[in-house]
Amino acid sequence: MTIADLTAKELGNLEANYVRLGKTTGGKYSLHEVRLEKLRRQPNPFGTRESFIKIIELAKVSTDAKLTYGDLWSAFRPNEKWKGQGTATIVKQALGRVAAYCVDHGLPIVTVLVVHSANRELSAKAKENIFNAARDLGVDVGANPEAFVERQIVGAMKISTDDLPAPEPSA
Image 1: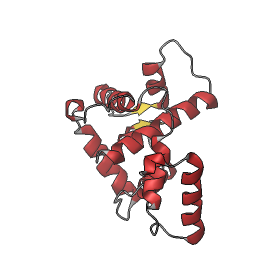
Image 2: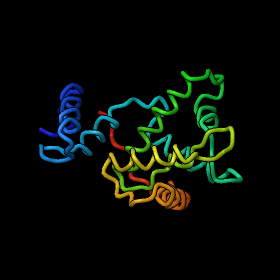
Image 3: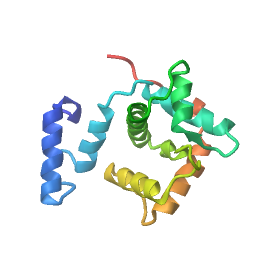
Image 4: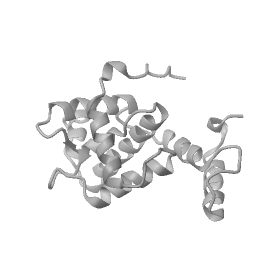
């Protein structure tokens, strides 16, 4: 049995037990593996690999190497207006799946290129959240959220989408 064979409830129970015990290892699957599997199962209405590629493409044509949630939404849903929190939730869910894709394939966390439109920057809180989320997925993040995010930005901008792993066959 692989981790992919576990039910959502079983994954939730494993995660809750690890958290309750203050541990990250000890069972057949580590807490990192459980959290990564839960992310893999989240739907991505845009397609995970497609979202990854679009983030890189949009960042590379941007004057500041960044894109907004709205830019990503418009790239995939050009005829649908932004509808506030509901739309933001869809984009955040897509970004979570992209982060899991990055971890699965040993790629920089390209979601660091996606910023809020107000100031086109990641806030200190956003950087800390990215840092903590990556650490929770088993990424070696170091000790400094700012430095980690900067390394991810530099790495993301070096990616050639031609070098990505081939798409996985559909079941």
